[in-house]
Image (cartoon, rainbow, N blue to C red; front, side, top):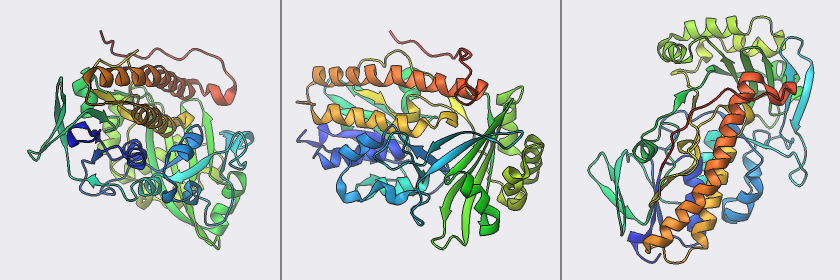
Length: 398
């Protein structure tokens, strides 16, 4: 890959696209990252993620110059291990715990603010912002990405890491995401010690509670070194009769209406879990409301120079914490194949590499999407149910 025509075109400057860029740069592989926003922090990208499955791969592949990944933990200021607790939503009793163990032990998790992880992964790599991808053109010698400002870029492989509403996926598969059965309402607040101390003692990174048609999260975003205050957020995830209709409502509803809905949906939960909603008030409601969507990947991706990673390949509900982990595993797998590849100017070699990658990510992505869907529908991971998930659709390729 000694010429610009042999570079890797990465569409999307989210976690997956940036991690891929870091690994490629560390191995001398030319690439470009194209981000649609004018700045990396132009819009809210999510709240916090819990990393576990991908940590060992990231440790091996990311450059050491980035610094210790654990320095961006939500608890880094106070040196506490990240852990979460699953509670009975009716009684507040503990059902299970996650994490809370050192990084060299099984079950370790790293909980970090999504924006902070994005900043970490964006260090010292070139990122072209305000580049809204429109379409690509592929031929025997390469692939060209086109943008709405009239510019284009030429490369050997194009990676769509442009999220759940991926334009790359739309062109590649002619398939969009579907609305997930749950709808979120979210809010945040800075809490004084007396209001967050009990929450933090129960679960240093967060608390998860669930009952029929409701999944509820209260989680830490940051904490002051002297523990005088902490920033928390909550997510009220409920299952309405018509998710598409309800999602449309949350997108246009006033903060007052969303606040009232959050209180109504969490009625009957223990006060210590829902106090944050009342403390945050209407002012703490996050607008525009986020939406949950799903996309199950096909058994394999089409043959060619274009592929997908992360939510573009497999969008899922967040109930198993698999979205970010799977996205980062995707780019670790793709980067490893690229590092070990020969001549990426050769069409047959490129097609072979993309197909090998597809055979890894499609089965794994389907498993994660279906598992997250089942966890939302039946909370099988929490309640021990071993029930088949409701069917999900995928688009077949030939």
